[in-house]
Amino acid sequence: MLIFLKPRIALAARLSARKQARRARPQNGRMRLTRWLLRALVVLGLAGALVASRAGPAELAVLYRASVDKQLAVPEEEVRRYAALTEAAFARAGVAVAAAQYVVVVDRDPWVQALLLLWRSAGGDYALVGASPVSTGRPGSFDHFETPLGVFEHGPANPDFRAEGTFNDNGIRGYGLRGMRVFDLGWQRVPKGWGDGATIEMRLQMHATDPDVLEQRLGTVQSKGCIRIPASVNKLLDVHGVLDAEYERLAREGHRLWVLPEGRDVIADAGRYVVVVESGRSQRPEWSPGPTRARRAIAPARPAAPAVPPKVPQPSWPIRR
Image (cartoon, rainbow, N blue to C red):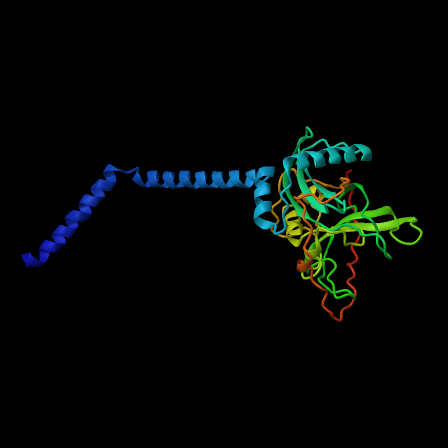
C-alpha cells in the first residue's frame, strides 16, 4: 500500500510548493498583464503615428510611387516652374489659399500633357507628390474644345458621379471601368474648337478613360475638352480624398454623400482646386515623353450604346467657397 501512496504524496508536495511560490510572488500575474498592455499601447501608438504620418506630402509621395502605374520624374527646377505658374493662376482668379492643401496642376501644353499633384503649405511653399501623363482637349473637329486655363474648384456644388463602364458608339468606355470616379468641375465658357469658334458652355470633368485603348495614348492631346487621367491616379485621388475638402466637411456634418467610397482613408490637408496651366514649350521635355506609336491600340469594333452619365440631384446643403 505504501508503494501506491508514494506517487500521490510526491504530487501533493509539488502542488503545495507551487501554491507557496504563487503566494510568495502575488504580483506576477498583474505584472504580466501590465507588460502586455504596455506592449499593446506601444503598437497602437506606432500604428497611430503611421496613420497620422500619411497626411504628410512625403508619405503620400510614397503611396503615389507604390500605387500609380504611369509616372513622370519631374526635375526640381520644373516643380518650381509649375509652383510659380500655379501661384500666378491663383492670383489671376482672385483665389486666396490660406490653409495647407493639395493641388492638382495640369499642363495642357501639347508638348507636355502632364498632371502634377502638388502640396502647398500655408506659406506658399510647394512639394511634389507625384506626376503622370494626361490627355487634354484637342480642338479641330466637331464638339471638341481646348481644355480651358484657370482655377477650377471641386466640390458638391457640381456633384461627382461614377462611371457605369458602358461602351459608346465607337466601342470606347469614355469614363473608364465601372466605378471610376468622375470629378466634375462644372460648366465653363469656352471657345468652340470648330466652326466659327464662338464661346459656348462645356462641362469640364477630370476622369479615367478606356484602359484598353485610350489610356495608352495619355501624354498626347486626345479628349473633347475634359482631362483624362490614369485609372490608378483616379483611385488615389478618390480613396484618399485628395480633392475632397468640401465633401469631407459635409460628411462630418452628417450629410450622406453616396459618391464617397466606403473604407476611404482620407489624408489631412485635402484640397479643392484643379489648376490648368500652359507652360509654353517649343519641344517635348525629356521628363514627359509621349506614348510610342507601337503602344497605341486600335479601338475594337463592338456594338454598344452610348454611355450616359446618371442624373445626380443637386445638393440641398450650403456650399462654402
